[in-house]
Figure: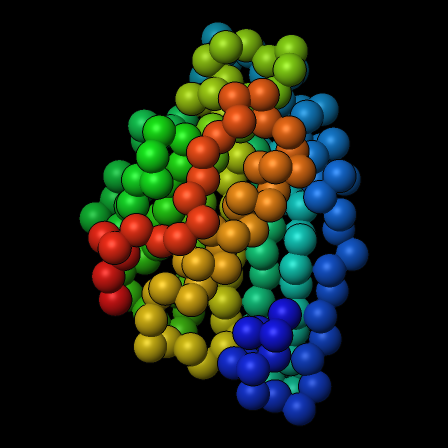
Length: 180
């Protein structure tokens, strides 16, 4: 929140962080065991907004959101489009972000293999925990690294709070391969 307040440069910032990790984990853990590997696709779970802020004086689009949900695509299919950069963080996580930093295209994602008790074994690859950060609020276009570092930190907190059965290994620092 301190970073967000420093970079938003507005007189009034309306933050909302009412969602708890326990509630987000409950949503994820309820939906994932019901998934059937024979289905053609997994329907995403409801999004859990962990942090949301807006600056009303700058209009509806001046928003910052950090949310988590179950991803709809398997681990191997993450970021296959040319306009995205994908960074492997080891066997359990990937960062994905767009190559450009235009005002309307500042989104950052992390995908985590997060095992859930009672789910089919293939769930680890096919139904992931997805974190997304969208920043249409700050004017910090100079670097990808601050956004990705905050997203990485939140992913570690969420994976620990979700008590993933596979204990995913998420680094605490960005790899040097993340370039601006």
